[in-house]
Image (cartoon, rainbow, N blue to C red; front, side, top):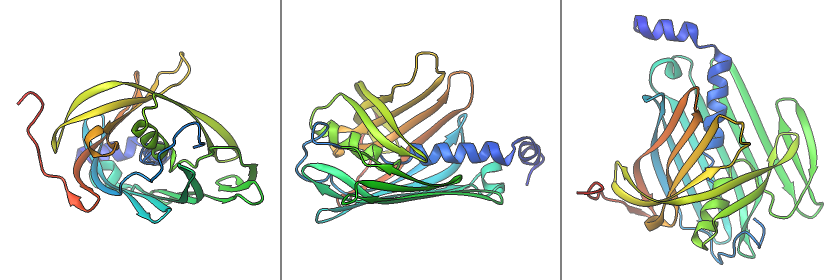
Length: 267
């Protein structure tokens, strides 16, 4: 470990890195009721390898995958700190969401997330009982049983709902999501088409922003690739007056086919 890394590790508290890793868990949940989407079939499966940056410096690697088996779908993500303080403190994140595609919409059945930084581990999980109309949420502070509402999602499957909606022309989403001991509405809005330079060349994308209070300095922006069934290929998150984090595409397999590099934008 270099002297600079040692100084950074000393100044970066594990709780700060834990908060960062929890943020990654939310970001990588690559993200309904019938009124939100009417896609008759689930989106196509994919595996995306990505790199994670903090303030422009590479700190980790991530893999996201979406699998389909009949009406059942599985979303998975895995992130590991591979550089600097993130590597030294052993930052790791794993998540999984499993559900069914019913009446043109994703319906989660269970999810789990595990985030580890140094000696501290935070685990959350949930089990949806659609017959009883409840979801059991297990989190750091205990267990909470919450009522199911139409279109409810878990933190891992929010991105799936947005991706599905883009395919049907939606521009805005108000998504109820299990957030530990409560149901919290997540608000997203499509902000327009953008040509995005990536490791795979120029991709035509739609940028979707998470909408927060006007006083908030936080931002979350996700770029979904139009030519690849709206797979998320870039995420930017942070504070306008603080840390800036990015998840950037490195390689992509869509429905079993490896995507080859295309020319850069403007080439």
